[in-house]
Image (cartoon, rainbow, N blue to C red; front, side):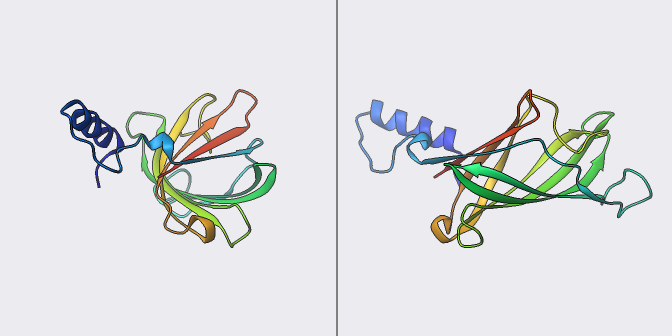
Length: 164
């Protein structure tokens, strides 16, 4: 799979060279969906590794948000995969999430890795984390792209899905 920036550079080079091909469009020409929700509640924490913070610990969240004036349900599962990585006081966590935009009939699936403060279940204010959109169901069957999740100053969140 070609990275979108490399694809955009290739398209520019071909246009400059005088070639016109179909499919050379900005990723911004795809569909963008913005899901918002309030502060994240305390997760259900499963201490599955060694006692205390350790590899294997899981955090489970269920949140209600909005998209285009409609209620959105979200389920998040985060698993700690490394401690003090890439530096002291930081945990590496893998996230799997299901964003239910129309109940179970239309969902988006996301997955990715992020670095989180060890003492917190969530990112610092104004941090943005990019993860992959790895599929979906219903209206979003076969979805691909990425999502940018940003924690705002009031502890609410914005998730901007860029679908290709």
